[in-house]
Length: 82
Image (cartoon, rainbow, N blue to C red; front, top):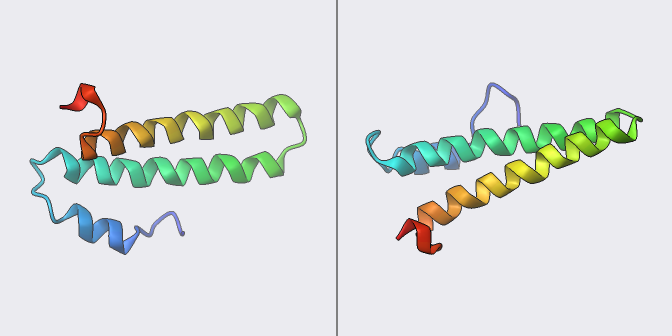
């Protein structure tokens, strides 16, 4: 996905919620985080230094955990979000 483009399905889903609703924002943030995950994973293949590769992969893993937290919040699947 081009950096200037947004995912049309995410964009449409986001606008189902008023701007004052948290999910309007969590959907956009998840999309942005997913772009960084993809970028970090692409960079792993572009460098040969193992420590940099580990850093980029760790970045991707940590951000995926954050995306999961947003999903849990949206779905109220974790006790903390009830």
